[in-house]
Each structure stands twice: as C-alpha cells, then as structure tokens.
Length: 271
Image (cartoon, rainbow, N blue to C red; front, side):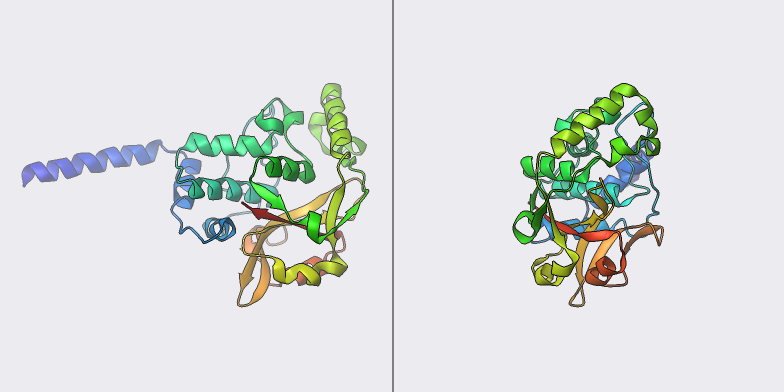
C-alpha cells in the first residue's frame, strides 16, 4: 500500500512540474484540443472557438520588432482569432497535439509561402491570406460562386505608410508595393449587402465570414465565424465594440447592414 502511495505521489509531482513548464499558450492549446469533433470542420471550429469566448480584444498583438512568430491565445483581434481557430481545428481534425506543429501551422498561414522573412513577408491583405489558404487545401472560397467580381485596387498600405511603423524602411515599403501589385492581379470577389439574404441559408456553422470594405485601397474590415443559434445566423468574433470574444447579440444580417464601412462579405469554408 505504501509503495502505491509513493508511486502516485511521484506521478503527481512529475505531472505538476510538466504543467508548470508549459507556457500559457501551450496550456491553452491543450484545452482547445480537448473538444468534441463535429461532423464538419466548421462545427469543430465552433467548438474550438467556444473555448475562447470571453477572452479580451487586443489589437496589434502581432506587431513586434524585429518580426517574429507570435503565439498568443490570451487575447485576440478579429484576424488572430480566426487564424488560431483554423490552426487548432486542423490539429483536432488530424489528432495532432505537438505545440511545435501549432507554431508551424500558424507560420504556414501567416507568412507568404510559410517563410518568416521580416515584416513584409507577413500576409497583410486578407485576400492574399485566402489565396494561400485555398492553395494549401485549408479552405474553399465560396465567394467566387456566390458573389460578384469587382476591380478594386488594393494599395492602402503603400498609400498610408504613416499607419505602419515598419514602412519607414524603404526596402520594406518597396516589398509591400510589389506585394500589392501581385495581389491586384487577381479579381476581387464579394457578396454585396443587397445580396446577403440570397445566400444566408447556404452559410454553415464555422464558415469564415469576412467583411469587405468601402474604404479605398482596403480589402476587408473584419472577420469572424458563422454560428447558427436558435435558427438564426449570428457571428462569433473578437469584437472591438465589446472588447472581447463573443457571439453577436444581433443576427449576422443585422450586423452587416448596420455598419456603413462594410460593403459586403466573403464566405470561406474549412476543408
């Protein structure tokens, strides 16, 4: 009996030290990997996102000098919430748990061709993020078949370098301008506000909802996840207004219509 008690004590001490050795991000990753798998990746994404409800909204958490991979599951903006949920959903789907794999998944989505090479290597326009994620088999962009193409020119960063401290570096600014030229080679698809209710019923739980912008040179304003609740479609997102990760009290359609700078949406489905 005494030997059994000693063995239990040793195991408990080892487990305690292992837990202490983990960073808050590693512990949060483990929590998000302990969710029920849905019948679709989108449903799993909702289960993952629910573990993050109530976390604070904090902007510009990726802005580090020099540029480095930021892994932060303590606070979010709209973009980092979606990106982290996608990474954790994929880990759940493939039954992966290694923290380094989580880091690799973030890198593969956040940086052009999955290579971290300074500020300009980070994907800043969400339309480029969509293209890379689709090419990597992570999502399918339903906007191409549900929406309409426009000829919007994306040049907000090069036209407003004062908003981006890293753009004081001439070489960085040149790389950003080349990136904009590349992005502008592809058509810009969106589902306009007037057409939202034509596609609403086709949107599924966990679809990534991207709000396109009326601002010249800018592609999108905001992102979140579609969430059907009591037969109505809502948005699970990191809210700037409420300063936390939450499910919107109004429906997705109401949210879209009430904000003048939202021109329409894009709909992305996890594979």
